[in-house]
Image 1 (tube, rainbow, N blue to C red):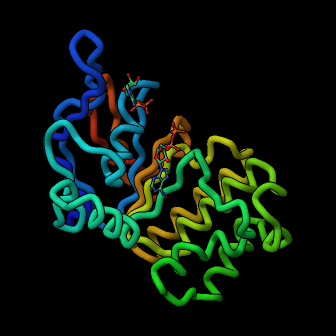
Image 2 (image 1 turned 135 degrees about the vertical axis):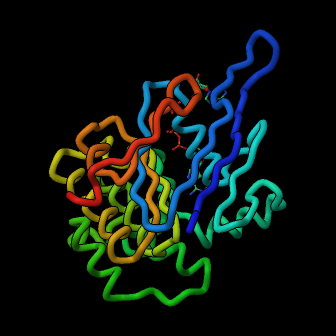
Amino acid sequence: MNVISVDGLSKSYGKGTMQVDALQQVSFQINQGEFVAVVGASGSGKSTLLHLLGGLDKPSGGYVHIDGEDLYSLKEKERAVFRRRKIGFIFQSYNLIPVLNVEENIRLPLLLDHRQPDRAYIDDLIHTLGLHERRKHLPSELSGGQQQRVAIGRALAYRPAIILADEPTGNLDTANGREVIELLKLAVRQYHQTVVIITHDMNIASEADRVLHLQDGKLLSDTQGRGRDA
Ligand code: ADP
Ligand code: ADP
């Protein structure tokens, strides 16, 4: 089943001679449980696409359907609720809450949605992320890489249907980056979550089920990766 459907999606910034066509008539579908990598040169439209998939911005044309719901026909408030229920973001700006400790930050989306945390899963997550000795620490007491891992934990704790990740391993060393990818793969395999990840790392892209290659705001290619048989 298509969990994400993108049809003729376009986005322009600015006006007149200053106009930038960041995305031009992009269409594709993503099935539940797919691990999709988005690649392309800097400025090719990757972040713009990810923001539009997540309901964080308004397209200039075209549609995004998530689970059959036309994302941009929803009112702003409805879209925010929909987003919180369905989508976990792993972005470069961590957006951690400075007065909450590691564990509280990770549990926050569940609290906001009045859901009971799955304690065992969250403990496991905190261990896998190598944060167990830091669970009572505030974000300001953590390194950049640790903060990034808290943000990842927060996105995963919720087990959202869709995880959107913008260079999640960008600030991590190889070993930590490896673990983050393994966590995302686990999310796909074990919990049938759908992952869309922007990456410059060709090793990561080669492990994906699919690779969407953007060039100058257009979809240059949509290829099967070797993720399924790896
Ligand atoms: P990528 O993530 O592949 O680097 P982006 O989606 O960030 O690409 O950007 C695509 C194009 O849109 C670039 O030319 C970029 O400069 C432009 N762009 C992105 N965001 C904005 C913005 N808020 N205002 C104006 N131009 C933007
Ligand atoms: P960049 O890629 O330029 O570092 P980000 O992709 O981290 O920027 O964030 C882009 C925008 O998306 C920011 O304005 C940020 O506030 C917003 N954003 C990031 N995460 C979320 C979220 N979970 N919910 C709503 N908005 C978010």
